[in-house]
Length: 543
Image 1 (cartoon, rainbow, N blue to C red):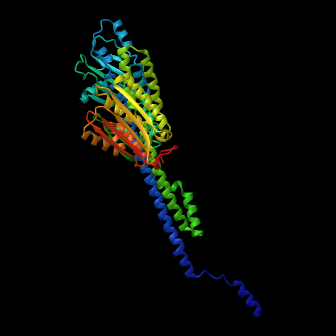
Image 2: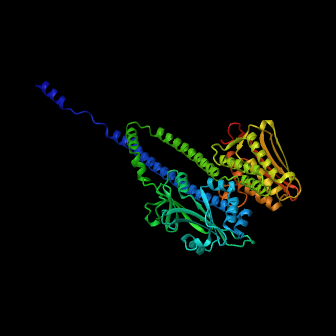
């Protein structure tokens, strides 16, 4: 009887409960800290995501602003090339005796291969409107009376500006052609004191090519360029050339980054829209990761190891963002760099060709146009000193063709410097500066010396000319531009080629390059560049 009762009581006995104080300790010391730290981690991840998005918005807005300004500057260069063409200007000011006389001269002045290449490269066409009564309408040259009743001309005249830019929906293209979107650059050409007739140059930029370039530079961000009440170009691919521009009030969403840009008095607004999945969307996208993290942390208290790993990943991500930022700035410089020294050389050759009637010179212009296109599409910013000197020698040969006996030059490169790498087109930029600002203004013969050597294993580059020289105030201003070269400096007027070269040298050497400039009025100028030995590499200067 007692044995039976004892066995029944054993069957009813419950397992011993986990001590209450241990459960509290587990909750307080493991579960609660894990939950708190996980919440902090989630908040940090959200903040990091927002920071990444903000950076991408700002970078997209910066690239869009740069692309717009660069496109308008290219249109300006086409208009300037036409305005400075004496033969073209004389043709527009001349009273033509007959249609045949006009046509023969028209064929001559519009056969400039350089101008055609310039328009083709920049996806633009030009139109000239004049009140010369003897011109024959057609082929890009028209009577100004044809434009006076058109909307674009009325807007230009009402603006009171000498130069005017405008996104334009062309409803005046005729009954057969559908209205299309255009980007216009309009400027006067009759500013020359000897001009007999009024002349207006209208550069029509290919809207389709421009919108595709905006989609490319925005790198996946949705944004638009607006001018007042209209959204004119979207980066998300909503740019139908045959639809009128979209009212800004109909654009949905919140602005993530906004910039204002003004060109010759015409204001533009560049807006990048916020991603609809930002903020809470970051958590929704990654909810499986958060769930696994909570479960694993609840079972295995390895929080501190995970926190350390998270911190390290954060540092690596920050480093990657810094590298990406530098690469973006370098790509922006690549897209902006416009080797204007080639244009100066082309203009010199063209003028000589006009005066001498040399067909060989025209062929040289074609070859130089090919060189310009190749240099505008490089994949690697680094180049050996040897190859850079080949470019310098070719450039100086062309300048000697222009200046004749007024220019002599000497290139001296130590053998152990031949394979050292530098940013492309840096030395030739300083050489071009010596030609244009040194030799060109001097009537007596001058020399240009280009020297590259090593001093205490540092790479030393010197460009010396025996040209006009500059005064102390200009020397100080140029030295300041070289030492403080920046992206913002490139937006200013002046010697942007030198600023561009100096900025890329600073990026390549992590701001450790040293510049020097010495000049004496009437004697000449010497520019020095010293690249520290730790940044001289036969494989890559950058990094």
